[in-house]
Length: 258
Image (tube, rainbow, N blue to C red; front, side):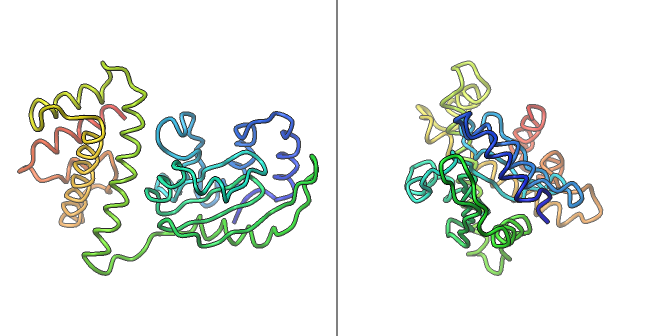
């Protein structure tokens, strides 16, 4: 269950209304989502949008649950939905919540599932409206476990969505990194070995596809060795076939840098 009462949440939001930034309300939203008893932790992404990801990454015992993007109190979410940023997020992140702290919208695979308003704002006063409905929305978001893969087509769609989210993060990070950074050095290596004159967009796409394929290969390898270590990003390279040394080296490098 959502761990903080909505009354306490709204009091915190109202107290910080004068600060004029959505970031001032991050702790209140984190407290609303966090549930230590269930192992749920809403991680505030300090670099946030600059890293190509939403404001919160929500995990349950270190396993990814979903993402939350928070806009300033009372902003029109209909307009936010139309922005390029939100379109990228909806395309890339399968379990996603958009909020302006008073209204919450939950999306699965880019499609809105639920939309509820917690409180109305009159001047700097917040009036509680639908706490039960918001509780249901957040519970469904936090308990979402993904869609069951029933066919090769389902698998292809899920892998495509994963690849798009990785591509978005890489493209954003690359645009912010200086020419001597790790990603630029890796891009140069790809250009020298695989494709001359590689531009940033093509590199982000190629790198994302490589990572997705590597994760798939590792997951298959893990399934064939059920008695081994638990499958995590840190153990993934263990399960990549020895016949693909390039992928093994790449994943080992990623682990060292994470």
